[in-house]
Length: 333
Ligand code: TYM
Image (cartoon, rainbow, N blue to C red):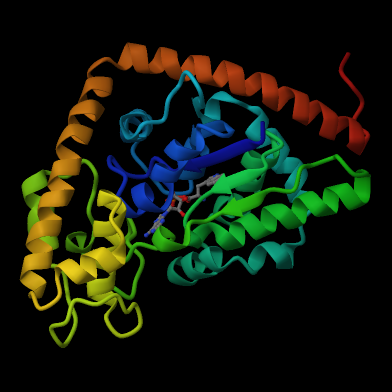
């Protein structure tokens, strides 16, 4: 069966609705048809300064949220990136086959380094996309389910894989395809619906965190910025606020945007927001109960992650040995 890999950074106690709708729900449905590996990419999170105890908690919390969303450890491999040393090993190899200019053209790097200056920007932030490419290539991944913001990083992974194949022969690396579901590829900030929902948002009121108090969540939805006029219509250009709410509503209920437009024809923004707040709270309450269940028993969670790491390591070792051999590194015997 074709292989899937994806991951999220444990840079917060809670994933947000963008992570959930842009990626995590797709991870869950793809498990039926693919062999999937889902990873908590804690090494990537080192690019953000974090208190060590907090990083550990967030790593478990992220894994618990994967499980609560429906990632099934009986079918998919669920693990923590730093538990499989091969990720960092392959990243080095890839960095030796990537141009400085090519890496420097990554827009996420350009944005972040512009904000923090060159001494405030770590070398790790620069090589971040190569660690990500290593995550993907290490498992001969065919498909990578992510949101729109990862498209350029995926393109870099593809270029590096193609370069390895050109230099060391076909089959050195599998060239991965992005899996980006258009309808939910970019969920927007509730206070600034032209910006993507992001952990580093200007105001916490614009983001819905999956582990937030449902009362706070409901309030944030009811106070979401809507647009001029009063018609409830899906029009991302003209009505970004309302369109974002319709996207979230449709994705969480499985209903179509057209059906929702019909239902809210002639009604006000307030009705839409009140109903959406209920939909989100109804989704979050059982989700949060499941997350708490996993976190109450960290020993079991850690066992599960150890088992995932062992399965991932076996696959990773094979790929890394193949690549090392193709590159001419002397086998250790
Ligand atoms: P991260 O942790 O920033 O985000 C995790 C996933 O959530 C998606 N996402 C969104 N989707 C829709 N709307 C949004 N507003 C939104 N915000 C975030 C992201 O596209 C992503 O799929 N570099 C990656 C982590 C990573 C990775 C990998 C992913 C490391 N190695 C290998 C895939 C394969 C990142 O920072 O994601």
